[in-house]
Amino acid sequence: MRLRSRLMLSFILKRIVSTIPVMAVVALTVFLLLRLSPGDPAAVIAGDYATAEQIAKIREQLGLNEPIVVQFVHWLGALVRGDLGVSIFSNLPVTTLIAQRIEPTLMLALTTIVFSVLVAVPLGVLAAWKSGTWVDRAVMAFAVIGFSVPVFVMGYFLIYGFALGLHWFPVQGYRSPFTDPGLFVSHITLPTLALSAIFIALIARITRASVLEVLQEDYIRTARAKGQAETKVLLVHALGNAAVPIVTVIGLGVALLIGGVVVTESVFNIPGLGRLVVDAILKRDYPIIQGLILFFSFLYIALNLLIDILYTLLDPRIRY
Amino acid sequence: MSETAKALPVGATMFGGWRPLAARYPFVVASAAIILAMVLAAIFAPLLWTIDPLALNPLQRLKPPSELNWFGTDQFGRDVWSRVVFGTRVSVTVGVAVAILSISIGLVIGLLAGYIRMLDGILMRIMDGLMAIPGVLLAIALVSLSGASQITVIIAITVPEIPRVVRLVRAVVLTVREEPYVEAAIAAGTRLPLILIRHVLPNCVPALIVQATYVCASAMLTEAILSFLGAGTPPEIPSWGNMMAEGRAFFPIAPRIVLFPGAALALMILAVNVLGDGLRDRLDPKLARRV
Image 1 (tube, rainbow over the protein chains, first blue to last red):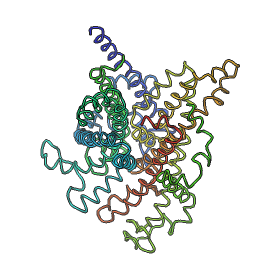
Image 2: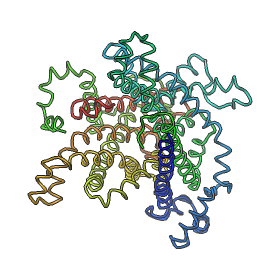
Image 3: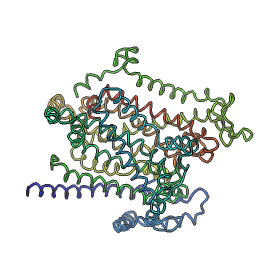
Image 4: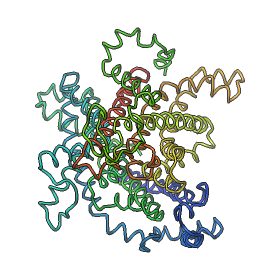
């Protein structure tokens, strides 16, 4: 037991250390993006009608006049202190802008993950249990469709049917759950449905595959042989042992979620981080785009680290 | 790998004739037919559009579908059908170009990483880092820094697709390099480039064909997202994403301006994904069993 917990601790430490090179590559990539892009990035950011003065000012603001190594040291130093840069347009720190806009994004991401898991896991287990029957085929067909219909296309079809057609939900907008929970639910329902389709597809597929694999194990046959109820076999023995790949997919799906949130917020006019990106594109406010890339990348790395650590605590079969 | 190797001599005989093929894989064959139709539409677009897709006609704004305008007209009186047909061109070009580019670049990097131990660590850390950056955001940054053009968009979508190809190729190389025939080749004094091309590369082909279809679908989706967000194909070119972005303000009055290109995009991606799944089941059964 002592040995095991020591092994576990060293694994967790190793895993944490292993994120450092990944984060370094992310930081270097984002840094080099601006410096190595063809042409004069300051001129591109300033736009077609900018004066030489404006371009010079932007170059100054981005620190592009110094030698590249000096630039990198300054930039990395600021990054380590949690400074993601300053918006060209509003002159506010990017971290402040993120803090202002993060609530709707976080809420949409949470409702999407919760809803997707609640729908997809039972669907996946059902498909695995009824494997080879029409139920299985229907679930898998739904998964292929859910995986293929782009989130904004799904969003517009949902608005067309449920908001413009049936008037069940508002067309666009966002309300905070802390001020008005009822309006929050009615506003967040369609975006959540649109964004969930791809996750339901992804999670249902992996749940089906993992449960199917576990169902062939000897201990499942034993459980059945000793007269265990089928629901208990499925939910406790099979799903319990299939949990690891399912959680992994949810972690990896965060990358998809980030891209999806940006688009969904744009379709449903939700004032979150996705709208921050779109506004930054329109105003050519590159520091915001760069800051958000760093923010989302580090979030993704941290979440996957957390999931990996959770396994080692939850699943005794994980080898270190 | 032996089973995939046996399935390798592809061509018409791979599935054993056409009619049994359609009976056994109805969805895959239907998808292939849809893709073929879309590709033909892209190539012969000028013959298919009824009205110049760029022509403005202020007198015919927001008209419902009619004999003249099959899908109606948009807020500038442009013909939606002709523009959707033109959009096929943009989508197919981007999908095919990104698939070819990212597979070729990923193949080279993957072969190097899998075969040369010294490079493996560095290359794979770089790939891990690239994979941690959300692809859509990376593409947005690349496009907004180098200005919107079709070539920029293709490059911007290719970059985030490369790491997954590299990982796939590397995984195949790592299993193949232990095979007796590779050891025999090394023992016989075959030079490294020749080993890679003659023995390792053919083993990557089935997995790469499958991966190419997924990359193609993903690239078409990303192109549409980028255009929709205003960081993609230049707005004067009627791509599906641009049409949806421009039509959204008129969505409550004329939803079809948004829904027609949206449906075309969804159908296209669905067809490519179904074809990819079919190819995977056939060419890469090991992968098929895992997912």
